Image (tube, helix red, strand yellow):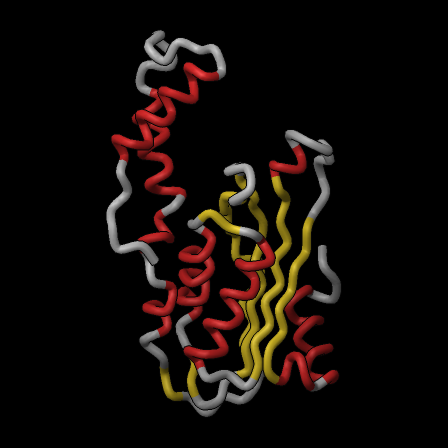
Length: 193
């Protein structure tokens, strides 16, 4: 998490330089406001750099519930740190409480806070899982992310429709095969779609 605010002026200057470098005129009518628009867009897309995902889990509720809690199909979008192109998809989260639960919206907020940073899908999956395991003191956590990456669909290999799936299983979801199987079934709805 970054404490300093985003420097929109520096971003706008960099976008003007980039437009010139590709042979465009950053002063022409259609591009004149683009540097400032891009700076404002980056402020939104990278808001997670100034957000503490752990803060969403500070409010938990004591509850003697000992079955899985699952929230599927949390939509997200992020920016691939390799090409600064978007990737987007769905996150599925499950945890096995140990006397403490959190509001469902908090799970979605954790996903959003980590996604709104320059990211890798693999890291995003692990960050969400490890934070939930730690802050909820859960017996187990499972996170599965399904996403399409524009750095693969609109450039390079150009394979639209390809979906990357990552998972992170912790605690009982990793060590107990029956618990893991149940979690996988609930997380994927009987199979990754």
